[in-house]
Length: 276
Ligand code: KMH
Ligand code: ZN
Image 1 (tube, protein in one colour):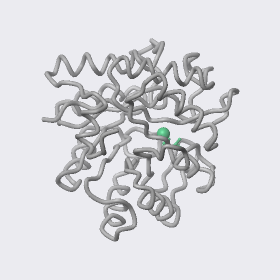
Image 2: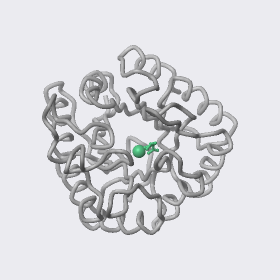
Image 3: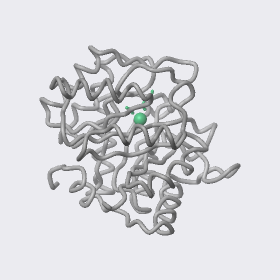
Image 4: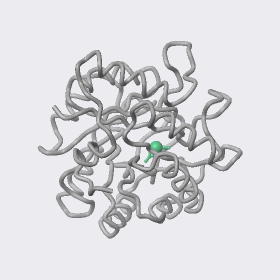
């Protein structure tokens, strides 16, 4: 079994300091959280950025500033900037995160429209085709975000048609978003059973499911994403003080379950990325 790749989704677009004071907004805070996650064992940082007041933004310049600062603190980390942004942003706004220098190694590509709590996360076919085209043109490896079972069928069909980058594909199964596919092991198993041979996959459990899904994922040979974007608690009633604490818990789980944790370079090899 490959080593375990841990991704830290350090910031997100929806969570706030009111919910957990450690949620990062400023560039300095974002770097601090990225470093805490990497130092704890994360090979990848999934990145959203904010204005200093916490407003989510997809500003190219803000991504550039944050990425440069993160690379200074964590020179070898794999960054996966979000092209999802926040609900309600336009496709052009969202795509700005692919405009940074150097061109990102990877970026998220959301695989369909879905409910998102009280809102609708809009990912129409034309939007996804535009995002796929951008990533093909720039050589960016997508992380295919599936919030719903049907998203897998959508993206596999697009890959077959050459509308998005194909094999080897990396999926992130995000389970437990209110209104989307529930965070249950049988749902995860169905998704994993239906990805093409040679693909890699990550599982993200939302809220209290962060760790209940991390355990089966570690055993099944998948990779784990945790972080403030998805869950603010280390355990029931105990807020995490940093993303590093959440990553460290996964590292400890992996150790107990006998799976080694991948460095960023090992993750590059597993994901089929070029050496940096
Ligand atoms: N903020 C969510 C609406 C992504 O990063 O690509 C979408 C999201 C997915 O976070
Ligand atoms: Zn995200």
